Length: 342
Figure 1 (spheres, rainbow, N blue to C red):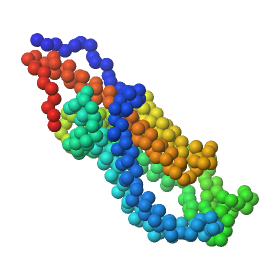
Figure 2 (figure 1 turned 90 degrees about the horizontal axis):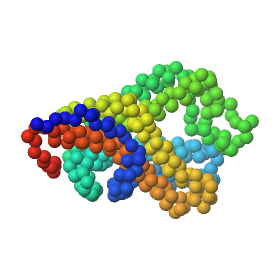
Figure 3 (figure 1 turned 120 degrees about the horizontal axis):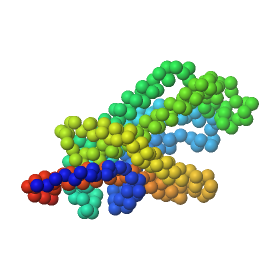
């Protein structure tokens, strides 16, 4: 008769090193994620580019005239661009859930085999609803926490009204940016910001920092909860409990959970800022084909960081599957079977 081992299995925790080690096998997925990020925002960018092509050359306009032209552009295309951007954000979210579901289910059903993109997409479609519930739980929690944090603060702060003309100047006037400090107007963003007391500015800074930490915690809990779906123990509509389990684990291991997300945020910001840094140091890279290529390379690197971040949480599923395999093997009269393909 089989007996369970008295020594508890070591708890599997996220590992950035594991994410970097596993991601090179998923280059087709990285490229697809990069292309998806470019595609979902393309309609809004095309509408803006088409509308901006009808504006006069900005070099021939003074600050206030440019402000009026920009106001007309926003009035003419703002609603459509906002709608297209929102649709693109939803499409990007749906794709992110799809490939994550495919990666997790491939780990369960086809571990050790190559990860072709078509197979990941097929597996992801089958598990998309359950994984989407986990992600939506995190989004709802993030919105609620940020609302609780910022609503009292906004009500406490004095109203600040900064318009486009305050930033650029009245029609026919030079831009305040081009003026020397003594010529700056007595109204506008500078006077509005100075209306805040030091205590209020410090409070806003603390709230912004707390918001960043909350977003990192929610992201880590979501990634952790998605990998917990490798061994789902509840009905699909109860998948939100996986997010709560991930949140508890992140609070127990803040360095391995939110800390891993923090490293990914720093890496993504670093590679995303490379085109700006290169343009500042090398004038030849401030425009034209070279800047375009550099921007696309930075986008591809950011997609790699996103996939590596998710794979950093893969050890969570490894520990669950190993525990389940050990428990099943110790069951009396058990005959081992390979997982059935979905």
